[in-house]
Image (tube, rainbow over the protein chains, first blue to last red):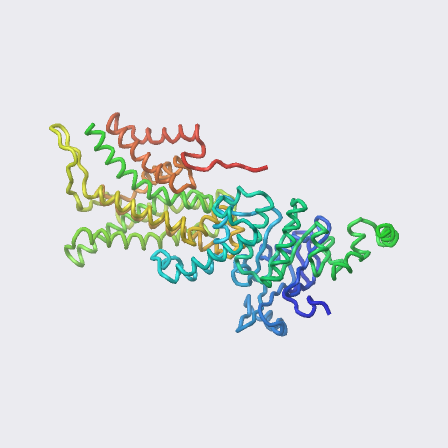
Length: 303
Length: 305
């Protein structure tokens, strides 16, 4: 049995998103497994980014449920009970269920612990590299600082929290090889380094799920290999599950455990990379042929 | 030379007050891109709060040392004015966020008119005199024709302003709250995705701007010894000019702009004619905007293609 069926972390059920008459996402259901790297792929305009926007609270889906689990897997049994209540989340010792479609965007990050990056780089370019990593730890610091009143007084508890956050930032600077650029404005970094910094910044929020929108876009092969190593490292060392949108098939096939394929807002394939690669429907979607011709095309592609 | 020195002292005092108000304009503009036209009237309200506090102290406690009276006025004015500005943001601006750009601006003009009329109706249209405080002077340069003097209240205004600016700079540059504010300034959506409560951060910005305006209001009342419901407009517009002159969105710019406007106004009155002091201040603004549209310390908007 596949991990995303056995131990799902995120469940999308019957997700539909309409903009006026346009159906961007149509009755989409899939799960992302705990500890998996799940790739969401599909031709341009297939609705991948819309799915991300629904997960991270930018859009309220027209229909459907998006649920995220913290802690033990058996908490899924209470999903329907949690949905029946008007609350956004159901939390208890050691486990929690979060109904993402009900949450405003900052709560998705602050409480449900979902982090995200965008297709275009959205660093705080006027702030230093280090500050970018510290901003992501804002909530932890604010609690420790008694909403800054204690921080201004310089109390020891706050100093300790501040020190811990700097240590964590340094740890990530080391992971992404940017220690020597810590005090430079983030906007001055080369493109590949900015991409890595964005991922590090997202990781500083201590997410359980990291959503990456085309992280390899615009990277050269070397930078792309660095990125693969970083993402695999995040899965191994930090135990964070990853959901990514990617066009670069070398990245997708190399690092993902599970691939979901969208076309015109509908799921057309879902499985292990090898299964998806050979799925005639996927080949048809990418090459643009009618179903009857698929076999012919497939033969041609494989030969 | 003596006249120059004296006017320099007067100009810095006035400039400090403008600078404190200008920070409120520049911060709010930085974070939500809106010119808060009601800010000058918030400043005026704070001067009234200070005056009422002063009278209450006199009525309830009797005579207290001046320093204690001023500290009490500062505390009460900062708390109550912050509450006012928090409420204004909540009622008049937040519901319009995400609406078209001009909507909150018009709302701000409405709030401005509301505040000055509210004070006029409840406090009366006449100027309210306040007994002089800290009027003693220190003579710095003695000469047969002209003594250069600095009064205790001028010293107080400069010292309080300097301390506040230092504390404020620390808050914005070094604390997590300040980082969150700067992050919201650059990219509100991204900030919220990192778990920052943007609405709350904006509220805090309004509260901080109001607290500084309240300090300016107390100083203004102590300095001039009189307050009136229409006092919000002129200092408000001057402080806005200071913010634009220094580069709107830039905190050091607001302070530098405030000092410059104060100095220009005072020197023009001393050496040319007092009737045209406002013309002088605003002409400098026009000239700066023509040749340096981003202001003195503002960052030019560079669009990367």
